[in-house]
Image (cartoon, protein in one colour):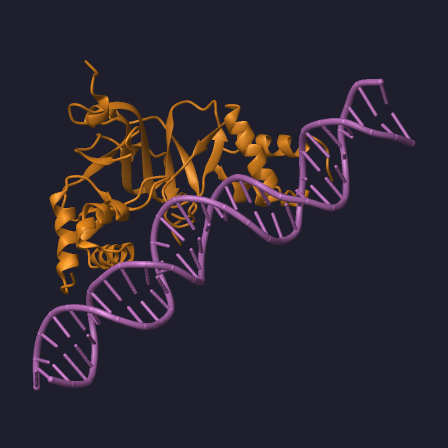
Length: 124
Length: 124
DNA sequence: CCGAGAGTGAGAATCGATTATCATTCTCGT
DNA sequence: ACGAGAATGATAATCGATTCTCACTCTCGG
């Protein structure tokens, strides 16, 4: 059940393979068959984050999520219903120029909310 | 030192008078001369929020903030240095249309980060 | 085969934010 | 002035997320 690096590979592989940011709990749940504990998940993602291998995504009111560090500039969509977070490619123009004079904008973040495709199904 | 409603008036008045969202602690600190306790601040802002009198602003990694409920659509700027949050009038075009097909966008949020005017001073 | 050292999981501990508790204080109509 | 009921503040309790602890397991070079 243990094999140095196998948990790490599973966690980082899962993150790279998934097209949306995952919480520590989502990761542990996805890998539950391996019996991985949450402390281990946190250890792995924290180290990988510090090493710049993955990115941390924080949204208000929910735990930190992790995704590949090499994704192009993008933003996030949080489903009001299932609470999952999805990647949204692209960016709105002129975002940084919204700030009034005197503010030096160094980064920005756009969060969309609503119903994801799964939760938006029209019940026939 | 107590006068029914005076604390409430002080808190809501402060919120309406301030042009940026305030945390419970910022409110308590601003009114420290009145000896208001944090439980009272929370009670007041929670009730006012439930009554729709003020709006709650939540940013990742910091406590909830409160501002007037009647402000026009706007967004927020968080100073990387002093951690204060400021209002940013206006909005970027086409924000909602960023989401891929299948996503129903119901609301959005833009967070700018960088240096606020106070922290951006050029040391002569 | 052995030992050093990293990895692991269960659970305890911690953290900051917020809420609950409760004895006390105040307000107000009468 | 009086009593019911709301408001208050100090502090304890709670909450969810995350980190720490520690005994144990595994890997791997020699």
